[in-house]
Image 1 (tube, rainbow, N blue to C red):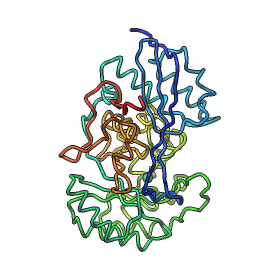
Image 2 (image 1 turned 135 degrees about the vertical axis):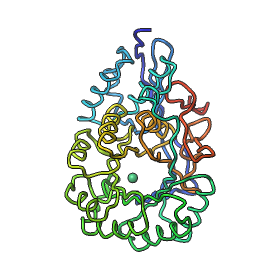
Image 3 (image 1 turned 180 degrees about the vertical axis):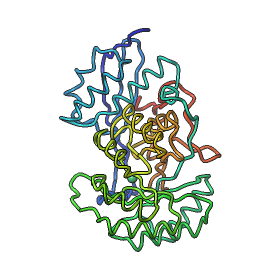
Image 4 (image 1 turned 60 degrees about the vertical axis):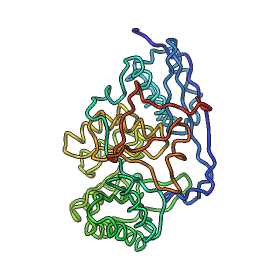
Length: 366
Ligand SMILES: [Mg+2]
């Protein structure tokens, strides 16, 4: 099979109602529904690649750049997607669907195609809601009971004292039996949210207080463009700094690598720079003795695509598992999958034993 031609790219927009709503810490608007766009890339060999993770709004105009081409020439398609990203959206789910095809053609998981370093990665429960300290302490204990060895807590910079008390309460509850990460979400905003980021002094003060609580990393304390600010946090507090989940270009992350502003590189392979380019950043970060563990907060298919790249290149030490019951559950997150993704009894997320990405869609969406 030397050529597997793309015959059609189909988009399917689906949604599930969220009742009660989910109060995402980074979104001023409560979420009453959760949308996903499934991307199906059909080929003349009868193999269809499936992915999801970004809106794909406006992609229809560019479909003709792929149809009739060989699906296996992924680097060519990545360069095409980069040219499109200059003018329109980031359509990286198309790349993920192409890797799904290649995996199915080769009879191998995408993780194997990306280097096959690991078969599973310890998951961290990535909490999405702001909860009062007592409630977050209870949630930390429940997560540990379920097998998680790490969790991430959000702090709203305008509710700083409450946020730090929340981390204190979680640390008090679990002692040193779990790693705790903290996300300040100061690098980007939802469309229409024009509030400014905190400044380096405020971020350094937070970092120093979190360092005393033995926080494993501090995520997005400042915009990535604040090179000196980020470096001053790393140097001043000794805290690991994480970021890059929504970087729009590979060169933004090259700049971080060059200036050494981050300890943890997190480009999401579906909403940031794609799988191939994330691998480049991951390899460079790992070669510099920095960490690579991407943002995965999209849906179950997005978690899988990020898991394959992370396991392939040997990233970690944890993979993000968006999970904050009862607001955010595997059933809500993975509503498009036949079975929601679950951690195993060692608290790890394993590569599915299937070729490609291994996303099995719920019958009504396939
Ligand atoms: Mg984040």
